[in-house]
Length: 305
Image (cartoon, rainbow, N blue to C red; front, side):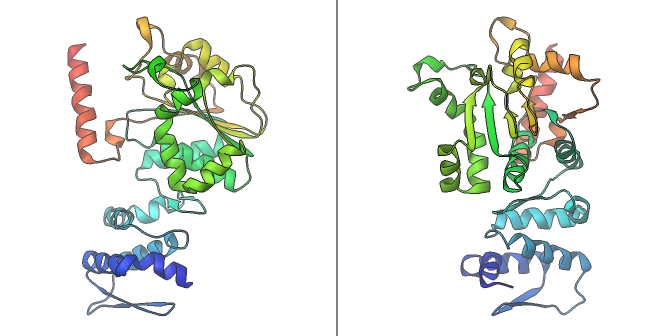
């Protein structure tokens, strides 16, 4: 193994080594470019598979204890091998789906030109879409990434924010920026934005354009109007892919206007070439409390209706 890979695996002051040893009840010895495993008992095959997975991940970036704990948890659930073929391999890091539905979502994005992803916050809709977009860019399957969302106020007034319309919308796309920074690094993202390889823009800026050889993500699509959604979907050109994400229970459109996302689902659901993935509160992969919050709101709103 390369010294950089060993350093990524061990972590600062060997904190990762101590964490893995405690969790797997074994002893790890690192000497030069070699890793040895000591155990008084026969080492379970699942533990070996877990360490191999962690070593593979450390080829690209330093491991965090959070990532290690995630792999260990997957190992306990028997998900490690099952999800292995759906890992999104980026130059900087590997991203592994956490549920069967996320695996099917990744498969659908890989196979179909247009994909819709509908569900509550925390289900990985946007994060996995950004990961697939970065992978397509790194593999030179597309020449640019376009990230957009409708400029709809969610309880705040955009007019009071400084800057032009694009700058006003930037804070609303912060989760997309955060995902890009994590996957590509801050400096590279800023460089790609300056070269227009990555474009972040309000949905209104898409009108009149034909988007060829691009990976396009429309986030917060529940806040589009039917006309805006039709406009967006008809921008897709040759060699392009699009992912539309949204939560139809969180519409911020004024005056009870129809959501373009719900409208498009009613119209397009019979087209086989378009993928549809429906997440629920059971698919939330953030802190367990987030899942409880989503379920509590669902129960309240269903009872209210």
